[in-house]
Amino acid sequence: MNDDVLAPIPPLLRERLEAVSTATLATALFRRGLRNQFVQGVRRLSAPGRRMVGPAFTLRYIPAREDLDVVAVFRDPKHPQRLAVETVPPGHVLVMDCRQDASAAGAGGILATRLKVRGCAGLVTDGGLRDADDIAALGLPAFCAAPSAPTNLTKHHAVDINLPIGCGSAPVYPGDIVVGDGDGVIILPREIAEDVAEEVFEQEGLEAFLRSEVAQGRPLPGTYPPNEETLQRYRESVRNRDLLISTEI
Image (cartoon, rainbow, N blue to C red; front, side, top):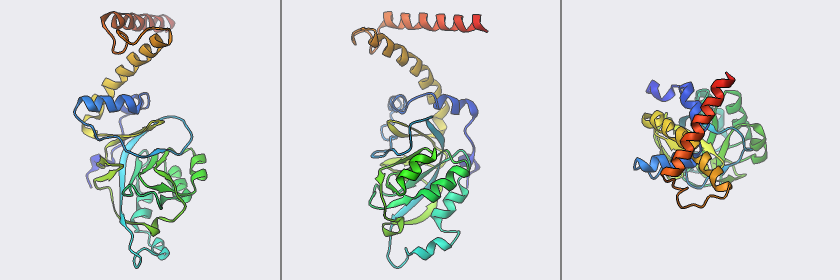
């Protein structure tokens, strides 16, 4: 396994991504021609809080087969689902490809608790999660297509970990950066993550200013998108803020 996909996120990159929205990231990726990085059909199960940010550690399921997927398989510590939970590095997000089938759960409350204890940054599946109320109360960022009581064995057969997968129609490569918030989950290719994060960090500042302008009664024409007059007011607000910070220091 390539050590790069297991590497933690540099602190500055994590700090910037925790400060930006998936919506702004989606637009930045669209500018680069990437239209399919948003995980379709999942929603946040956990309570709102700090944005989920972490490298992807992947688990792939195929359809279950009745003679293979029996409860006894979980006694094997090398079962791919259990192995994924025990080997995902701290700070990473476990991303599960359940083929967009939420009629059974890809994981449940005990496994989610283990992920939290191990320092996992979050859990994402395009299928279901069982013990939904327990997971929601854990404090572990969790995203799924729907709560679902049936065990994964009824529909899903875990086959391999940390290989490229599809999750909610989005391609996910091990080590890609996963960002989740109230709008959903977006997959940021690792090789462009730092450039995109720098761009969107600056864009978030501008958009916060534009929201305040609209809230104060400014019309959309000339404000969003901003014309040169609006941009000049924004630059002035940044200068005044920087000046205030420098005098306080």
